[in-house]
Length: 484
Image (cartoon, rainbow, N blue to C red; front, top):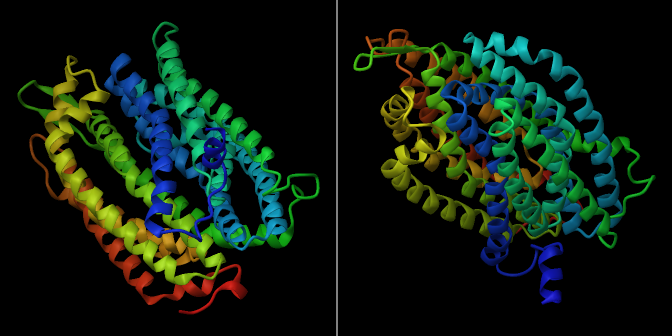
């Protein structure tokens, strides 16, 4: 039993064995871990939506694009590090692996402190710019953002450290950490928001406490892996070539996420401006669609976890096998990930089309006046959005291989063009094109139609680029890569 446990907690060499079995052995724990990680924000949404108000739920949703915008800095570091770690691990280059990890940890500290310093004073002004005008919603969202920025160091280190561990093929230990801290987060949410009456601020506080604990646990695990990676004063000193390599690989993903986040903020401003008038109840609300969008997004976040886990498994699989010069295995891995993702997506489309309303009820109190309205108007919009899963299957499968190869620039370009230059203006046009008594300033369904159209175009571009095979030339360990 002890031997089996050590094997589970050890690194996984994905350059040997059947591609399907090694990827699924890596992806399943990763999927469970992603579910546990999502429990952080999902628990926040459920607790504040049901125990505080729909306005509090909308406030949590309004703050999410702003958090993502600031966190692109350590996303840049994380992408560059995970690709480098996977390839150096696959090539068995321990010295470069150790210096890459050490450099990443130092960069993470610098970046997260920077985000904390500039994020705290800008929280309320940015919320005002996104047209959060309701006083209660603005107060809740400001409290939530301020506390989340205080937790930036913990969240940044957890994401970087877990990415490092995954790059070395280890997904079990981060899973144990996430399950433990996610359960703790639920308990703290209920305590802080319930008996202690801290409202939205309590949910944010619970989250950052658990993220700091997750980061500490992953760091201690990394320190134990001395046979694989060495951390000392020499390796944590940033080396300019490694810093530039991490930035070169990660910057396209960082720029992509940053521009995406900016576009999401503009779309969020559109969402916050939508007014819904319900003739049956006589309720007129400018926060109802914001709450609807959060409920739909939370269900969507859960549904997207399988494809995200498959994509991350494909990225590590591709990185290690490119490092080992086994391009034939990379192509086999892509086909497996794409097929699996499509099958899961079809199942999700059916399930959410039938039970989507019941899932949305998790985030609202159906006995409150706005509760039934969120379901009535939200379900038809949700049934538009679920068709995006088919497009995302191709995007996630192809981008996973491209990330593993270190070829992140094309995906950045495709995503920016699709989201900024197409989806954002399309959303505004489609919302404002249809006005009625129920939607006096525009039909919010246009937000989801624009999403479906643009996601499909981005998927097609990613698939075509993968088929060209140009990603094969981007390997860090070029001497090991051979042509088929």
